[in-house]
Amino acid sequence: MKRLGIVCGVKAEEAALGTLVDDPALRTAVSGASPAKAEDLARELVEVHGCTALLSFGVSGALSDALVPGDIAVARAVVMRDGKRIEASPQFAPLLAQCAARAGLTLKHVDMADAADVVADVAAKRALGRRTGTHAVDMESGAVAHVARELGVPFTALRAVSDAVHHTLPHAALGAIGPGGDIRVMTTVLRLMLRPQDLPAMMRLAAGSSKGFKSLGRCARDLVPGLLGVV
Image (cartoon, rainbow, N blue to C red; front, side):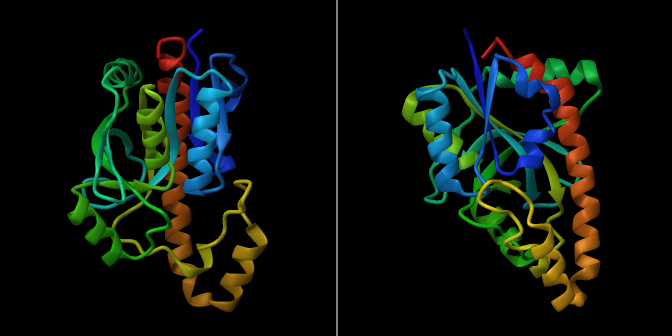
């Protein structure tokens, strides 16, 4: 039986899959925005749970003006922190394209960057994009790509953009993700109380995240089912 292993960074991304999480043709894991844990979980999905393909699924940040919040990005490749490029497996693209056409969705096929930590400010985002030639960044896709290459299973990344390249992530939002993938709401509120100047940036982040998670929900409803039992 073909089984898709899905690695998410936070529980909200896993929750976007809805009732799909109960489908025997897939298995999910949440890394808590830890690349090291994402790597361990991806390996476990294949070696312990018998997954025959891997998908990095969640939201991402834009590294160029080519992507805006709400866009749906599909990996052509992941550029690792050491500069090495890992190509996404080609069998995913036509399947996703067929599903997107039926649902009226537009997919952006881009190179994605691997990151060890949150890339928060505009200068750092643009510099990473220029250096790597990538347009999106997250903290799970690199781990998934590495494990997939090591174990010889197909992979891709399907990410909805939640923050634009010209938006700096506010200090109040940093460190908001717990090790289990929960959002530390009280920590964020307390940080915002100490730095009320972060409020406009938090409001922009909330608006972008809302667009990103709306698109992620569309991915779960209209795209992911087309991969089940096939890869």
